[in-house]
Length: 316
Length: 291
Image (cartoon, rainbow over all chains, first blue to last red):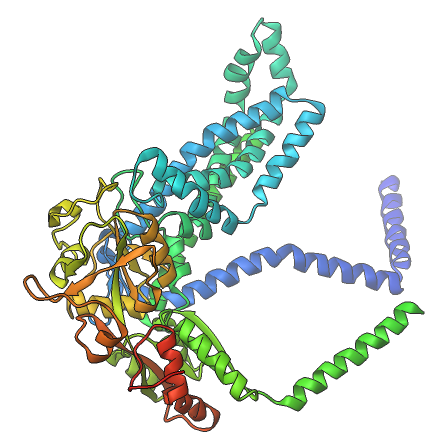
């Protein structure tokens, strides 16, 4: 009884002492101000994302509700939005273009980046490792227009020569370029995932007499699989949203490809090429924003699932 | 000390620069649009700058659609276009309180480009429609009875992006009012890109303004249909209208031009301006004698 009263009294004095301590001198204000600024910066990302989503939706939603024919939009391949008499707004061919290029890019990027990540995380050590990591990051910093230029000027004649095709601006060209663009980010994430596998797993496997390859193949890779999958999905998101390089390397032809040597056109490239011409607020303008909404939703879903998958491994 | 004196110098320089720009008070004319016309518009602007240094004409390309959209949105004084404004566009402009006025400043022949290896020298508009039209029927050169050395696969059909006036005019002239382009054309972003691609690609066919014809390609002689004589694309045949796919080139102003814009438009239509149009590879609107 008496001890608890004592404790209460003590707490009261503590509170008073804290209040005394909490003097409103300049330092206190600086502290509050900085806390406020950091808070605003912290939530700014959310504000920006919401703001962009709001803007894109505002510009495009009019078309969605008033004129859009969902079947025409998603299921026909004819895209001639500037036709004065009879405009056609079918994005099937554009989706096929984006999907084929992104798919091929993943076929190129996954083996490359997985191999690179395994080498950096499991084999390389010391200087080699540091140099490789810096170089991978450097690769990620190359501007996309430079990649596009490589596709246009270097890859195009090479592909024509090697495969004896009429034009080298095609799914293959853009797929390789995009694969190389997505590889660095995928390598970094895959390497993080491999590093996150505790060393005791490796030690235990080695103690059981496993070879180095067996350790990687049977123990480390399965343990890191969620992180690796998350990395691949982020790469897919990167490919999906890439604009400049695909604009330059695909040939920009509205077409459902039936081989990797066909020219295609991507959703993003269509927006980039046509938005400047469209009359602000006109139908063509709104359709382009509707494509924007669609792209936003798809990349949002891809990135969200990548994030959830990566988080999954951290918890488990 | 040194940094302070440097600052002072900088300040003086800045004030000087501001004063200088203020004093000259140049009028700026914004001119935008047709990619076909961009080179001609650029040299018109340069020459005009020499005659009348008080006026600066800022020229940019982007396609006729871009220019017309800018006219509707009210961001340019003069829009260049290689096609007529559509009824819909004129209505949109009027809805925003603008009165587009059309000026013809020259004529252009839409040349059909093929690779040097192309065996023939002429083509008919009917065949062009087969190549470019949706379900037109020709996807390989052999469908038209043509074999090109070094070309095995399909015809590489080169077109322009859909805000291009050249695209719109070609569609109307070759595929007809209701015609549609086929799927899978390579939509280039400028006349020069079309020329570059056709020069390098044996299977390719493309179209663009006469001014973009180079020595590394063939510009075909075009016949309206089989059995009729073909006409070569030249300034003369564009001017007299005998070339089947020739077209007027336009500039649009918001209302009848006044002030500096009027002076500039009058100068473009004058002897001097028309000589520049001719020098850039287009047919002038009247007979001119140039130095």
